[in-house]
Length: 90
Image (cartoon, rainbow, N blue to C red; front, side, top):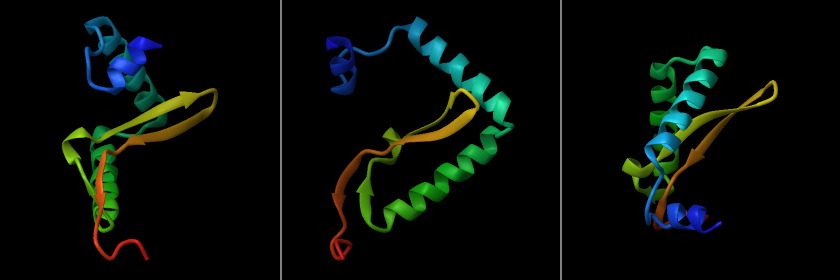
């Protein structure tokens, strides 16, 4: 529990073994879904474009991945929000 909390707060981080394991898992999911890195980067740019209309975000910290659970694949995003843009609350 503390390890996850430390990672969420940016204290510590993943070991190289955990990072390699995550990369392999992501590569396998991409392979099974036939989504190329180019397409995923285009999706990332479109998501940023839409969200940036209403929110100020930290683009450098955005994490977009594909996760497989059984026969379902999910696009999972983590987008740090700095603030809501003025007039976007409507």
